[in-house]
Amino acid sequence: MSDQIRTLIDNSRLTSVQISVVAICFLLNMVDGMDVLAISFAAPDIADEWSISPQSLGVVFSAALVGMTVGAVFLSPFSDVVGRRKLILASLVLVSVGMVATAQANSVAALIFLRFLAGLGIGSLLSSMTSMVSEYAPDRWRNLFILVLHAGYPIGAIIAGFAAAEILPLFGWRPLFVFAGLVSFAALPLVFLLLPESLEFLAKKQPRGALQKINAVLRRMGATPMAALHAEIAAKSRISVTSLLREPFRLATIKLWLAFFMAFAALYFLLSWVVKLAIESGLALENAIYAGVCLNLGAFFGSISLGALSNRFGLTRVIALFFVAGAISIVVYGSAKVSVAIVLVLVFILMYFVQGAFTGLYAVAARIYPTEIRTTGIGWAIGAGRLGAILGPVTAGLVLGAGLSIAWTFALFAIPMIFAAAFVSRIRLPAQ
Image: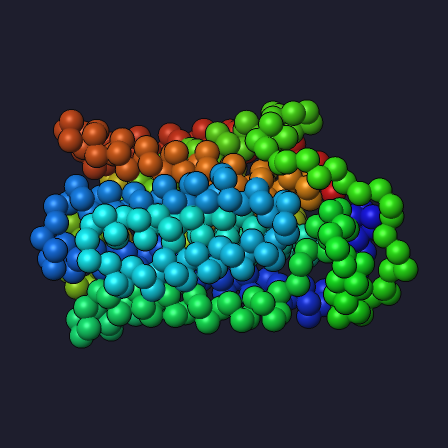
């Protein structure tokens, strides 16, 4: 029955229902970008107000990262049990409550807990949205739609930067979190009223009222409603990581995890050091937002471009080429001694390739796994990558502390990009 739904979606014209699913998930990922980056902009004011050490502030930053990892690995698999839509709504509530409550925090311990809480929601939300978009996209549009979804994050980061520039000098750091939290809350009715459940999930799991829900969406898409669902219902066994490590997924899963790990390590190193290096090249501190804008615009256009190119040249092949180009760009950026204007151009080019390749891995994950374990597979891949996100900046700090130059440190982090290219190029995607 889910195969019949898949065939119908692949062969039909693109409808307003499918476009609205992508648009809503894009907006939700923009909200994620705002929520994640808010703490980075607020950190200096928090440190001044509370007189806390950089070490304590580092724990606050890590709390959200740990929360995102736990959310991706342990919460997102419930999307394969209760449905994409329900988990998206629950995750959005977690994010919204965590953000608004952060504005009321009066201790480092409370701040750490609330960042962890928001991180839980963000981690599970991302995996569920990727599955949702994948399952509503026709095969010919699927790569692009997933990459469009993930391009929402850098746009949200840009909005967060401009909002912080307006709010922080006048009102301090607490209203920034209220603003971000209210935006998250405002998205709840949009999801509740307009985002349908995945048709593939409904056909595969057949929860109560599945036929009526499927037909309601099919009518909105201008398709013929179904008379009945097949009696065979997929087993309702508990989804676990072992599902990903059995044949025929084992080798693809291991390669995907390694690619995510390497990509996260390089990406989070760059996010920690790219703007700092731009400032050291002569960019005035008060103009550092321009480096952030170039960074996120490069990420946005890189993601969209990879999605458009992948249908013509092959998803894994284009991702591997982007990773190699990203590795070259990392070496050039780390060693370049040029004007500020050229530095900003290099920031754009660097993130165009690195973030474009990185977001492409989500499309790979969505294509590897079938409906019943898709969100579990995406969530665990993100979890494997988050280990790289933790180790990347830590390793950079160690090698810089040992006396390695910035140029050689950047060159060092080009190596994970080459490994990521090698791993992803060896993944064979199933025919869908």
